[in-house]
Length: 510
Image (cartoon, rainbow, N blue to C red; front, side, top):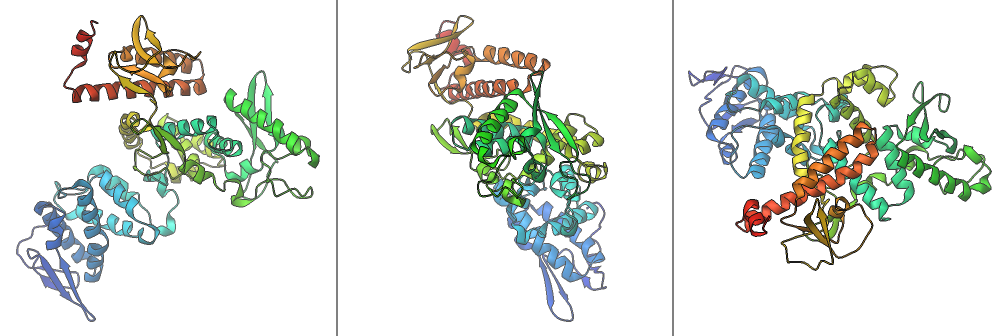
């Protein structure tokens, strides 16, 4: 043990009670009850070395706290955490990692969330008194250290990168936005929901600011659309007295312009003209009242829309509800998550806290410093990198089939630089072969030059970004991920069939 020597065998608690730390049951008598700390059950979930390290930590706890506090720590943190980690790994635990702690935190409902405070206490005790080889990992220790008491919870979801309440990872955002665009294009979600979600996602504004938008706030000059968001000097005051203009992607600006034209025609009988709110509540038609959503009504139903997005599953060839690769569960989205996501992504790209405060609409940098100053950018980037690796397998960008030459029911062969890349049952005018990868009717050939297509697409996307075409690059992202998925599926199929790519190309005469 690092800091505690367990000899002689008898040691003292804070109250001066002697006990034997080498035993598996520690028993203490208080004025009202008998307290027992049982370590034998922990051996079902943790290695003997880990249990020994926990014993050393509990010796330190007993020297600093009352016996009842130690019993609570065992009941609320040590036992449940080890049991959950064991059930997740399928083998006994020898140390506690970041993914174990985050998974345990996700398993707690609101009633039991205070158990995290005991996990924090347990982590500190292990760090001070436990064996260095059987503790919380450095990443897990950092994460737990950022947990705050329930009374001062501000910024905790951001600092700990909470998987369901904190910022989205960039890879999660790509999956979510692609599914949102697909749902809009296939008329699975209404226009007003799609536009509201886009505004929250692109601007990070508060719902009251979006609710106060009017038709006249969208402007177009020299082909550039801008949207003037009403600002507020102090909470609850100063609405529509000062504005900040945001440049919109051309597609979003054009979509908003079309929406405004439709709304003006629909509500022309109100005689409000350009003063008509961007989003009119259908039940609020009293001309004396303000025509905007009040309180939560602007975003009512939006989290449900995002959580219920459907994506194509290439395995079952059906539409299924979208899941987050990070949690394995359905996306849990609030509009506030978009705000903290934008600020966090800005930090990843090297923004200062002053720039983050401006993105969030804060008048001072103090709030940004409190919520975002402690973010570990390296840990965040590592998590996003791992997520991006799994994104190809979970997003379902490739919607077609994979087949060997001579299989399938192709009518029109597709090629790339003279080599056959796939087959299609349909004649269309899409940009071939790039658009084919995201088409339901495309049959990608196992021996196709998919790596070359991927290289060409990535180079083209980089050029688009250099020229400032961010939104157009989203289209490239979708095709790029689809090609990557084809390559991954091909390699897995070749492995199952006992073949290599070199052998397949040789058989095909390439």
